[in-house]
Image (cartoon, rainbow, N blue to C red; front, side, top):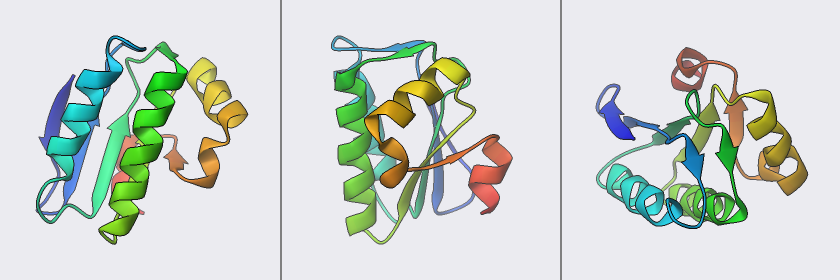
Length: 108
């Protein structure tokens, strides 16, 4: 898992292979650090993620709410069909915008 900058107000976090009760704490800390400063778009790239548990969903939802309070947005991209299905069942699309590619998440 790593964080990259895309311009002065966009951060991209490459999510880990699994986001479960053990890894969600680290994911939360990474997202919190990425939100610091004048970040307007926080993009979570799920290209490597095969599984996300409810603990991971909670971290994403709370981070999305914090970004909204800052006047920004949390976006997800490149999620595989299994992760997309979990997002759908959890109703995550009501809070977080999803994009097929990282380039789309950055540009829109």
